[in-house]
Image 1 (tube, rainbow, N blue to C red):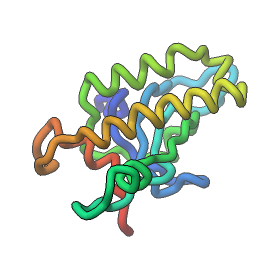
Image 2 (cartoon, one colour):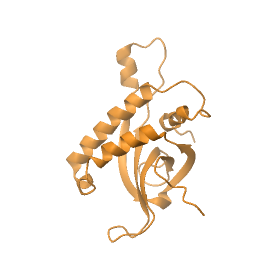
Image 3 (tube, helix red, strand yellow):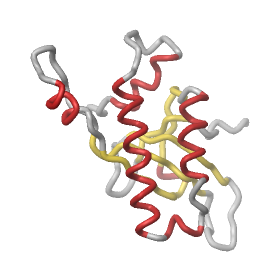
Length: 152
């Protein structure tokens, strides 16, 4: 069976505080290491989704309602469920570049992690504000799935 947990796959978190939230799989290590005794992956997800915006709202209110809250997490691959959606290459490359600027050993540092979260939040919020209109069948518009709250 081929690998389907490749970088760029949109996943749904199944366990922990972020259960039910959507995330982007950045890195997947299927082999165990000395540090992790289980297959693990690095994900970047949306903790607080953008809210509905109408025509009547002013620019200040629109900006406030389209802000996000982002999380970065290293977790067991058994605790995520892949979806059929993938992030477009340009967006994935940009997110990966922002994460790779910070070394893996520094990801445990609270301040570095906080700066990285803030940086990713700004990028993803801007990406959300400039999303093209269209259905989810369109490849360019598939990233809209990431920004919609999962209803269940």
